[in-house]
Length: 151
Image 1 (cartoon, one colour):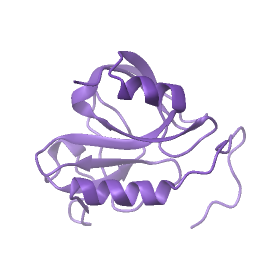
Image 2: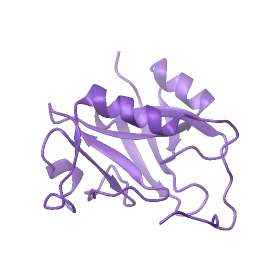
Image 3: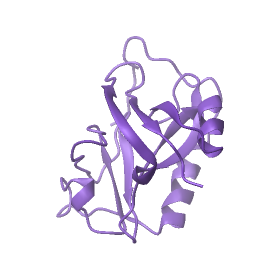
């Protein structure tokens, strides 16, 4: 079912983004397959290695159940073949640059392009220093956390 009307206050992306292409490339690079109906609802930290799925309950401190079908403003999680966990999303360009340079910073990750957050990114749990327990079910459905990329 397609969204025909955006929620009140929705801010469309300020730039064009090949979001679907980015996700497809990440799935291939990570060598993951979508969860099966039988696996759906399993928290990402207990999911089978080598799968991906979608969640509205994005968190780094609590189990995030993953499901088969994408939905508006749902995060895509990957459980890599080696067991590492990654989440796909979009960052503001300046935050993406700081993250890539290995700076410690507080990020707001959006589940898809939204307003100024138009730089696709893969964030790995191993880089999360602390969750700030900030989530926004409005304003783009972001999650906020402190991060420091290794090496």
